[in-house]
Image 1 (cartoon, rainbow, N blue to C red):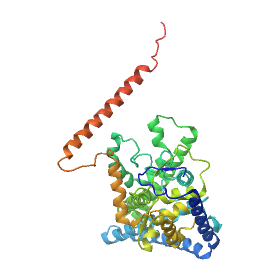
Image 2 (cartoon, rainbow, N blue to C red):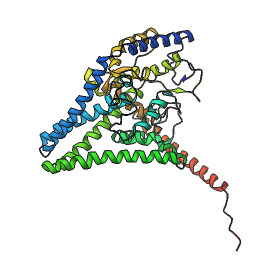
Image 3 (cartoon, helix red, strand yellow):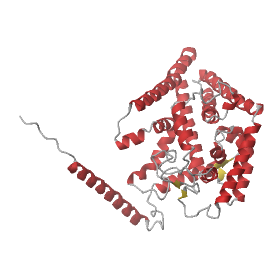
Image 4 (cartoon, rainbow, N blue to C red):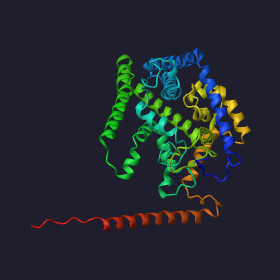
Length: 412
């Protein structure tokens, strides 16, 4: 396999090249079967979900006209949260993947859809559809893997700044849509490298700011003003929208974490995408680099069927309502080829993902032999390591400053 697993237990060591290519052919056959059977029931499904989402949002906004009364505020905020989750996960994410383009409906098409999210659709499609789904879980190439701000693999060099990654991950969860917007703009890389912004990048930044301004105006000015004019409920309506947006961010972040970061999900090392990577090898990377959430149908709908993250990574352009149907066949392929199908209930996957975030925020050997007796010694060693790292950074900065060309004063 062209992409090397970075875990000691190598699941694919028993697979031959012929096995991997046969696996690819079997997955291609499943994909083609779904493509050939797409039809009216699939189209009816997405239209029904959109109708429910819009009705739920409109009804919740209506209830919030009485938002000064706590029961109405709770009911309206709950409905608005569910509406925003549906719009973001099951509708927006999947429509922008092109899952429904085959319907030839200009109102439900990846080229025309704009979602209720801070990141403009065009920018998100570039970073998510084109980059993430091509270079899935390849360190240094798939920035979705930790969004460029977290340590996600033991073989990544530990740095003191990773100590705060649990806190930063929580902050990112609360403002997830804005974190994704900054990630789509590559703002982190530009700021860390001290790069200036090209005219093209400035245009993208202006587009994102315009999108955020439009959303904020709708959510926190226009709709609260209408509620205030009708029933003097502007404040409760604005607060309900803020709560709904925050809960939607926390939910989306949790679902994404469960699909990409739990213990057991593989990461890969590959300096550049091998042009000779076969279809079978690409499929295998998706299978090992994803995890599922088990649960009832309502849970799958509210996750945008990203609870079937393995199936989604294998077939990102298939209608989301089909992932649950093909999941048993994919699980059977995992078992037949000796691979681990990573699927657990939501609480377990969330806990596993957070455990990994915390574990990798520390040096690899920190938790080995950690007890109440050894904790003081290990903490003292960690403090020394942080201080030493700071001293090295200061020394490098001093050397760089001494080597910088000095300005020569012009003669009088």
